[in-house]
Length: 85
Image (tube, rainbow, N blue to C red; front, side, top):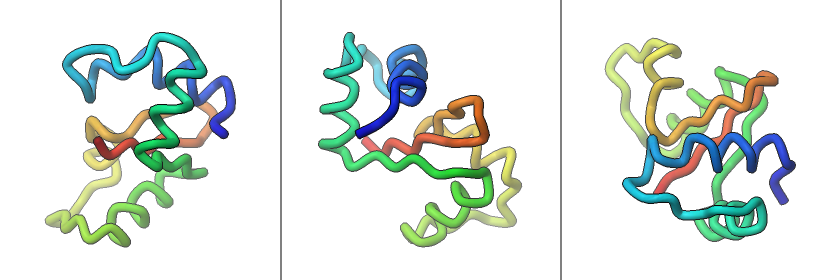
């Protein structure tokens, strides 16, 4: 389960990753994120670690650049949602 804050951020910002909304309610967002196995991490460093573990090769990645990726949603409390569609 994703908490309300995570779901609200995804609902608000989903168009940065998808051309059309994929969810309109928290329940739809939760179901969609579960289906994609989206991940919530606790820090910017964990975002970088996630992509490294997934085999994404960044050339001298600056953390700011990684955090600007369409797949990364900043929750606002230090956490990040990573959605790979």
